[in-house]
Length: 327
Image 1: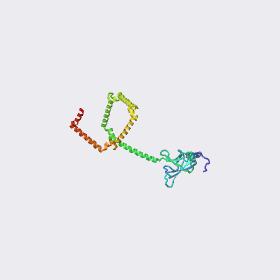
Image 2: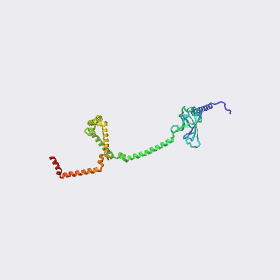
Image 3: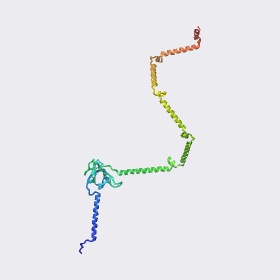
Image 4: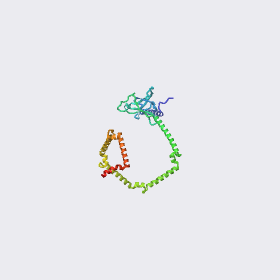
């Protein structure tokens, strides 16, 4: 049977649907490529990393937080002594942003959000430095290690748990009446003693507030204040008198005459001391000559004997004297 050469309406609708689907697919591919810069011209930058935790080939490259390219490849470098350059990361960056990336730009590995994917974020440079060209190496800035932060946070949580256990033990001991504070919280006798102490303190304060009491008079009676003012006034007058240059104390403080006299006395005393210490002087010979000492000692002995003899027989010595007086 011969087929009909005419296109039916059902066939036409199917064809139109297919064409529309292909058009939508083409527009979607174009829009996705435009959003991901798949059709833009790119150039390559190289970054050396110690590790690439979370980075992957095809990952996102940002410039100042905006999408600018992808990670082209991540390659291991030969083992050497430089442990800070273990990986070579090739970055495919949009050529339109080349003027923004300069010699002082830094690449940093960071996380999109708190738990998002790892990306490479490049900072914008300044006009003082040249633009990085295709194949140039970009410096890498130190990035925050979230694993280390989480490890520290885990340690802090562990410390908080231990602190909670210690607080639980302390509060348990307080509730059981252990220690001084526990006794204060649970012992009724200590509470009653504290209430009694407060009552006695209240009575003492009441006595202090009595207007006829000694303490109240000290607070309210102006007599003590007036006396204190009088004492201060007298002391001030005394200080003024002491500072008077014409007064006795003022002269003692300001006039050097007394000082000069004391110096002269000291000099005279020093001269006298030297005279006394001189063995050839009269005083020195009196102090050091043994012969003179013996003579003085003998003279004293003779005078003492003579006085004793006069006391025994005074007529013997007064007879001639009476005769002299009468004649």
